Image (cartoon, rainbow, N blue to C red; front, side, top):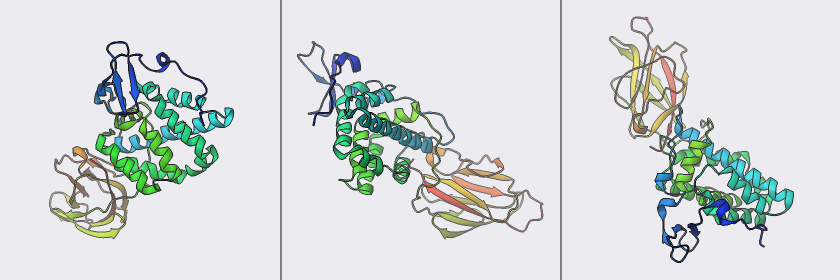
Length: 322
C-alpha cells in the first residue's frame, strides 16, 4: 500500500547535495552534483554531536528531558492519527511530523524513515495504535527514557541503544507499542533526543518511576533501617556542635533523593543532599539550608541545643543514570 500520494521536492525538505541512503542507513554528500556520493556522518541529525543543542537549564534536567521526549512523541503520534483519519492518506501525516520536528536541522533528509513510521501506523490501523498508547504506556516510556538519560538531560549513543533494547524487552518485539515507538526513535537517534529535550522542554514529574535497588550505609553518625521499596528509615543521633542528625552515603553513584517524610514532625534546620550524578546537589523536597560539604552524602540535623532527643525521617532514593 503506497500511502505517500504527494511527492515532495528534495529542495523543500533537505539540501540537494545531501541524501539519506537506506542501504547504509547513513547520510551522504555529493561534491559533483550526484555523480559521487560520500558518507557524511557530520550531517546526520541523529548522531552528529556537532548538531546537538545545549541542554535546557532546569532543576531536574534528566526528568524534564524524559518528559519532553514523551510529550513530543505523543504530540507527533496524535497529529499523525488525526491526519490519517481525516484524509485517509499518510502524506499529510508525514508533513505534520516534519513540521513538528522542524527545529532539528536536517530532519528532512530522513523523510523516508518518517514515511516508514506512518506506513506502520496505517498498516496496523490508527484506532489500534491509538488504543495501544495508553497513559500507562506513556508513563512506562517516561521511566525508560529517565533510566537512560545523562544527568544534564542529554543522550549518548549507548543511552539510545539501551532505550531501544528496554522498549523491546518491556513491550515485546512484535507489539504495536514497540513497532511504533522504535519507528519514532529511528529518525531521531541520540542527538535527536537531546535536541527534542532541549528545544521542546516541559517540566516533568518522575516520582512514579520504579527505582533500582538502592544500598546506602551510615557514615559518621545516624542509624539506617531498610524499609523496602527504596525507602530508608533514618534515626538521628547526637553530634556535638551540630545537634541531632545523620550522615548517610550511597554505595554506588547515581542515586538521588526522590521523596522525603519527616515522621516525627520536628523541623530539620539544615539539609544537604549530594549523591552522585556528576556532583550535582539535589535539594528535592527537603526543607532547610543547603550545607557546604563536598562529598557525596545526605546530611540532616536539628539546631544544637534545642533539647530534642532524636528525630526519625524516611527517605526514598531512586537511581539515575549518570
